[in-house]
Structure formats: C-alpha cells, structure tokens
Image 1 (spheres, each protein chain N blue to C red):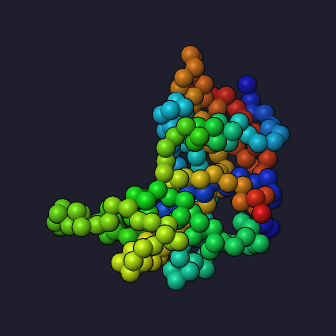
Image 2: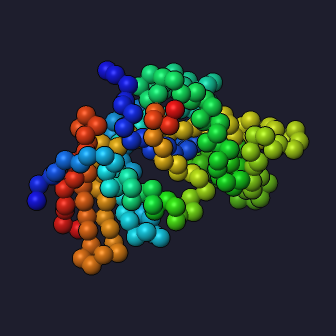
Length: 178
Length: 38
C-alpha cells in the first residue's frame, strides 16, 4: 500500500458523524454510492467511491482515517476546522441540533434551535461558544475517492451519457446509451 | 465504441467543477485535489 499520487482525485464533503450514513461508510468504506443532480447544469452524476471519514479527534473512528494514504503532510484537523468555517451559517447550525433523522417528539422544540452559527473566529458570547464547540464535535470531513463515474448530460439532444472508470489512477471513458 | 484511455483530468471532473460554480450548495460540497494542493 502506498499514498495516492498527486494526480489522484478526491472529492471533499462535510457530513454529520452522528448519522447512520457515517456508520455505514465506516463499516463498508469501499462500497459508497453517490448520486447528484445538478439542476442548473442539467447534469446527473452517479459515483462509486471509497470513502474516508475524518471526525473530531475525540471520536472513536478518528484513528481509522488513513492520513498516510491521503496526504501524510496535510494538517487534516486544520482542514476539518476550515471546512466547518466554509459552510453557510445554516449548515453550521445543523451540527449542533439533535441527530438528523432521529424522532422529533415535539416539533415546537425545533423553534428553539439556533438557525445559524458563526465561524469559529466570530463567536460573540458563551452560548455561541458552546454551540460552536458542539457543532465541531459532530462535523466531519468525508473524502471520496471515485472509482467509477456515470455522467448523464440532460441538456443536449440526444442526451449524452458517459461512464468513466479508474484503475491504478488511470481513467478510461466509454459512451453509454442514455 | 469501447472504453478509451484518458490523459490528464477526466471530463467528468471539469464538468463538475464548472457546475459547482453555478450551484448554491452552501459550501457543503467542496472539490479538491488535497495532495497536490499542499
């Protein structure tokens, strides 16, 4: 096993380490399917990836993150914190709410949750500090290493569909029937 | 037509980068080449 080369493509996403999705990724990191529809570009993506989760250092799965493979010289915790700051205020706040997908016994409770949270450097009071600390505990980076990418271009007539496959970081492409 | 080899950055990545310029995702998705970046 050796580190990825400099030309390797990794996609970075931010996710909540408390969700069932995170457990699924950790248990089967090589079997991740991602589907995106990008409406403004009329593109549909289906990716098959290997995933690597980087949670808060106190999380039990933190030791599973293969920094040696993904970038031994990268300060990954710094990357995670910057990823939190780069989110919108609404998304930052989502990390200090109850677990996404859990039962909401009283919908009125949702009105008490913060609608936005500041960046780390813009915390204004102790309450915000606690909320940001909680959000940072739950905010994780998910790095995706795509092995196969299926792109459907919906705008052209006829539509175009292309499958890209990588083996040992070399890509091939093949046209498919849309 | 069978699969053909690609040199350089695959078109799917270029299309994705261009698409993300248009989409408002609140920076929830960021696309990087982390190793070459450092």
